[in-house]
Length: 234
Image 1 (cartoon, helix red, strand yellow):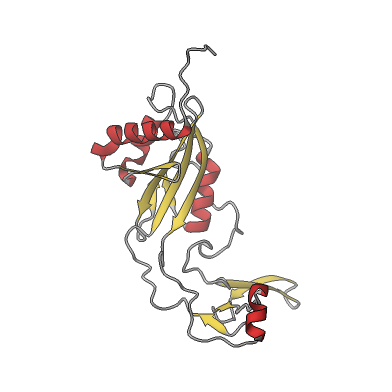
Image 2 (image 1 turned 30 degrees about the horizontal axis):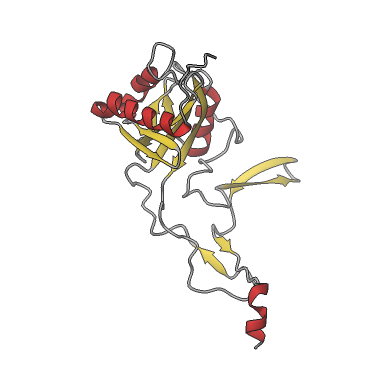
């Protein structure tokens, strides 16, 4: 490396990236947020594939050639504290959270897909996010841009029910073949929808509707703080 090379700090690279992203994509309905040493680019879902191509490759001014991670997010009950209950027993599990009521499962922008990208050349990262509605949580697959997205998109489909248009083999990857529902959705009951047991008469494992009440027990934990033990004794 030449002694005349100008070195930039991570903060300077992040600020430069945020400005460049805002200049390039602001007119396309995108927003750029910067904070905690990170940059987030929020993209309209109908333009995700187009903008992904613009972020990728040496021909792009950004050269985000590596997709590190892709995941789904469910914003249902976001900002709500569901663990606050009115009563609890001293024995421990005395509170229960009933998730069957006061939940708007049809909320707009309920789901999101988040992409974490890395530019090896510029040594910067960006988080790309696009929101999806609850009725049709579908977005174009980015496999044409980053082929490594294949299994990530299958995982998001399996756990959240998010569909990726153009995916060559969109099927479950973690749960069983006959699994009902998507377990990472916040309205998915902890007990699930189906239970299985061995039937001695049929001599095989059978699946049946779950027979227990879908209720989340919240433990009450009481800890004594040694810093205040003397004050309490007085």
